[in-house]
Image (cartoon, rainbow, N blue to C red; front, side, top):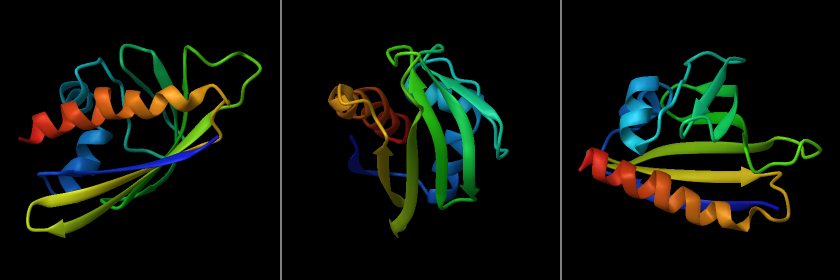
Length: 127
């Protein structure tokens, strides 16, 4: 299963990109403890260890591709993948497009999770 979500934030693509890959800022943006890296191949965790994966591709200030799974994935289920595309649409505003692929068939609820636990807190963080 896969889905695409879009949201707009009151910040630059550069700031959003750097915040996503920074442990302290990611934690503050989402409200859950995160350990992140700006390096391809390195692992990350988010939401107090509920989410984890690794950086697969990074295009500074434009694109982040990560393997992604949660504690709800079965051992037999492969990692899913997120692709985050950042596009500045006007001064100080960035559109984020999230493409989440290779989810288990039971993964429909992750749409709400992204909205409630990422997009809304990030909007509040950047004001």
